[in-house]
Picture (cartoon, rainbow, N blue to C red):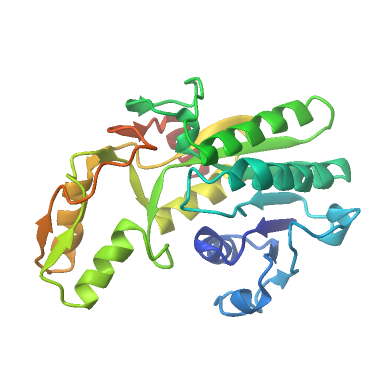
Length: 285
């Protein structure tokens, strides 16, 4: 079996390729637009790498990528600028036509990563059965892409899995992310750390667990043509997460709470329903 992974040199892609190498005997095909960045990945040389830019004009992408049996589509630009119009005006249509090209030319199965922001400004436990009401450009673009997939499935014979990612942390994450900023503060031996009030509840998962879940979801057949949450299922306050992170590293910082306002693009307290994910894990054992 051949598995194509897009966005292979990104935060998730770097880890997912290693997960696939470790847990499968399938041929892995990795793609991204930056060959030099891909060469820096420790998996380079262990997989078949095919460079590709979404702005390229290739008539048959299915053939170009060696006729993969499955695709795991991670690629996406413009993050973490969630309200950038780029997501709607450029990303949405580039990704739609990329996916449609693959499917129209023979692809039978694709797994695509979406986002918890598809749910919009809802608080509490978010279920895949909840109506989507995205309130930022990124969430709107992803949710619209998912709906495009639904429409494509009425005309083409293929299966899809839509993964709603929540919050992640781990090696290689954005330098502006919460835990990267904490790492920088520790490295610089800072004695204080500016942050929000820290009372917002968030559902965080380490990248190793994220990519394991992505792999399991991409392989399962319990939930075809459906959305599946990828998260811990637990909402924890950001302040508690920060305190625990510092404790694990035996480092003390004064937390300057309330320096930054709470983000306007996300609700105050939410986490994911993981009943589907738990069912997938149970059947994978």
